[in-house]
Length: 283
Image 1 (tube, one colour):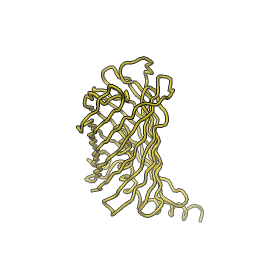
Image 2 (cartoon, helix red, strand yellow; image 1 turned 90 degrees about the vertical axis):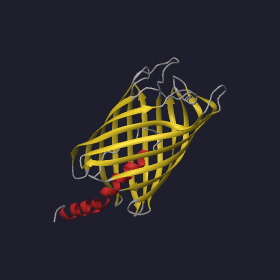
Image 3 (cartoon, one colour; image 1 turned 120 degrees about the horizontal axis):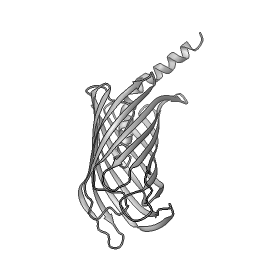
Image 4 (cartoon, one colour; image 1 turned 120 degrees about the vertical axis):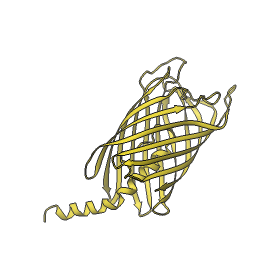
């Protein structure tokens, strides 16, 4: 019989989860704590998509200097409301829109906070370059437009000029312990207009469906500056973040996701932790 029956079993085991894997990736990456990681390697089928509103509570109480050394700081607290959506223009092209509003309370001496207002918006398009039976390679350009933050940008990350990014994404379906899952690796270059330093964005995701309706996601999001400035000036920072979350399918169209992330290392910025909750709708 050779490997024929085993191969057929693997293909059959993966096939029912392909659509859910696309939606799972979109939801997981949309609420990862920023515009940078809103990517997924798979494209949506033509005429279908995902809409995800989310809420994130974030608190930073540590700083990192130009050498990565840490010190305590007065708390920086952010409440963020985000809405993310993707739509399959064709089977090989997905269009996306991501926007956020935030409320900031910065307890550092002399700092100001921000009342609830829109914070940023990004548009992107994902182009499928090649598809294998269990893998995909995509290219994604993105344009990010921030609002000028008057008093809350004390983590030394915010800039007030548009940014443009080009990202390569590779995703693969997997079987682990008899359960369907996926892995995604991403590499992007972000050009920041004005004086802010350009960045490399290196992200990874692993997801596993542990129950028929329950999936677990482990993710890493990494920002590395290309300039590495040491003095005070325009935003120029490194940031390394780990995230864990679960997604529960309420129905075939509705799901809820909850989890949290921790910023465990960085340079020229504050480090914080966050919890989030998202409700997403597939159409």
